[in-house]
Amino acid sequence: MTVESSAWAADVVALLLDRGETLACAESLTGGALSAAIVDVPGASAVFRGGVVSYAASVKSSVLGVDPALIDVAGTVDPRVAEAMAIGVCRVVGSDWSIATTGVAGPGPAEGKEAGTAYVAVAGPDVKAGTGRRVTVRELRVPGGRAEVRMAVVLAGLSELCARLESR
View 1 (cartoon, rainbow, N blue to C red):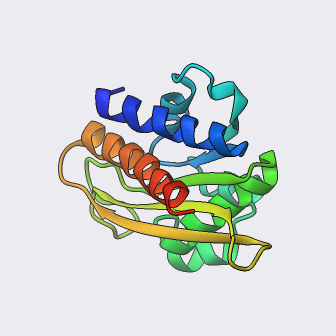
View 2: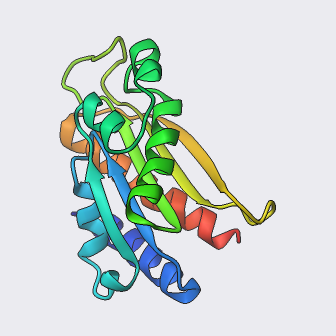
């Protein structure tokens, strides 16, 4: 945990508390670090519903509902997989918002993708439509080793959610 991730996580919790909304995480390459950053914030229990660490493709499909055919065609490091993970975890835990992470932490490539390639998806209520979810996906290319890649993805997820919450 870094000072920067702690600050972003505290902002996320405060914004969600102000709105009376909830959050869940679906994590792959971050392996629970994103959820840990959130629950380190005092008062997080009022907004954090839970998380799923879906490191294996089969867990992404069986628990989060990611289409196995999509994984067969695109692999797990794909923006559409991140989007499906974000929607799936909202359904599984009954949250208003979610952050999903998938990618390659390294040290080498995986699924034909370079280390440091990652996708962060944020799902939340679609205010304009009034129903359903709006999902934004951000692609990352992070230099560095495993620890740096994973932390950068945690920070990206928290900052993306903050941006979405602040824009409402």
